[in-house]
Image (cartoon, rainbow, N blue to C red; front, side, top):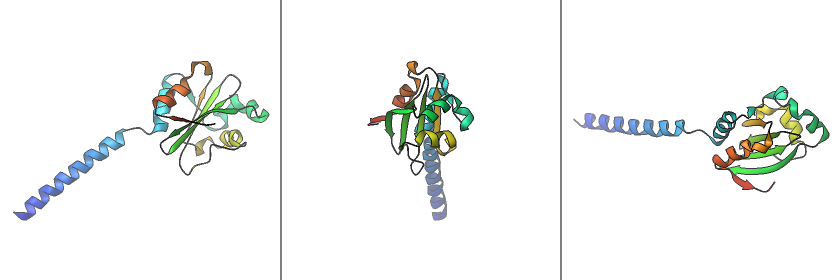
Length: 142
């Protein structure tokens, strides 16, 4: 009889652990939340050099500049302003830094090393900024 009670207790513990895992697994991370929001509102994901071709001249000229920065738990987001577009970069802990004069070039060459890179062609709409705010971004100094 004791083994039946122990087995029942084990089943209950496993069921509770499974429920906790399911709840945690169903919640998107901040980079996923931001990307979903932005893509739904007309931004696009920038992958590789081809995804950032619109930024090439600004990167070369050194005019792609940081304008906003957010902390998002352990993640960090940075909004860069270019000529007629904006780029949002979400970094991850232990990933490449979102600081430094060479950031635009590093971003252009290695977009895959960041959690997500999003491009907004009509920055007056403010899609990227709104999506970061909705995902709980806390403004930080640029």
